[in-house]
Image (cartoon, rainbow, N blue to C red; front, side):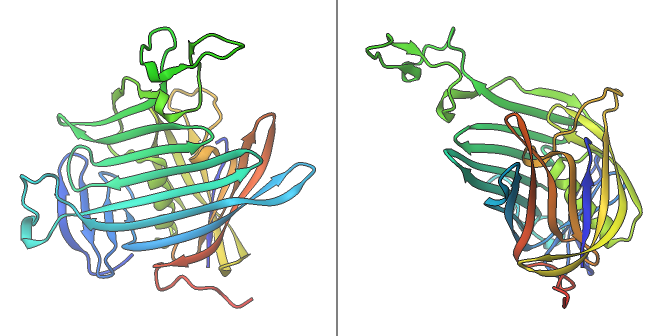
Length: 339
């Protein structure tokens, strides 16, 4: 059974506390099923499963062509023991090893000569700084990467954001960045090429953030928790690069979805992001999907079953649908209904 998470231009029992951090009131608890409960300073907590894999087919609705399968998307999450350094004990208070949670979303596909591999990695750590590390990496035909870290730093809730960029042809003196002479053109430095080796980390942006802010991937797991707890509405700040949006999640309609993984009863959760500055700007979500985005979640467990949205493709906007085709390690209550 399922629930959508709609974006417009916008648990387990028997918890055992194994780590706590003051300030952001960060607490990581381990459930009897091995999952991790991540409690926030304010508002709803969310759960990271011990070993869950959700596999999706990527269907793109191209104008004049129709629906075409172009790739795959996989959402994998897990937990593991955490040791901050070799100088710290591997076992924490109460004789329990501190636990960390992680989530990885990987999209891959090809279209004509364009090759894409896009990966988003999230790590939630039992420490003050960084409490969370969120990395976004694109490779293939185009290459770019960014990193967001946040937590308590010098007693303040803080984020650090950095991204890479192409080196400057005017100042770069690295010989491997030069293009060899041809009969049409003399030797010269490359200009905004797409090679990863020619990109470097730019100066990071550091700022104070709301104490209860979360990243985009954690927001999806908050939507799962919202469905599990039967809440009609949830509000929180969502960190996006070097800024944040004020987000409202609202429980929406019900629908039965038929997928390659089975048939599931779902609900929609509407996600409305607004910039605190009041500026009007189109929101860009995970993997470049923006406009009107719907993530359908299982009614009972909150497991994502389908993600629908719009993806810019040059001068055109194409519809994109990530639909569940396989799963393992999901909660016991997640099961296909008879048609």
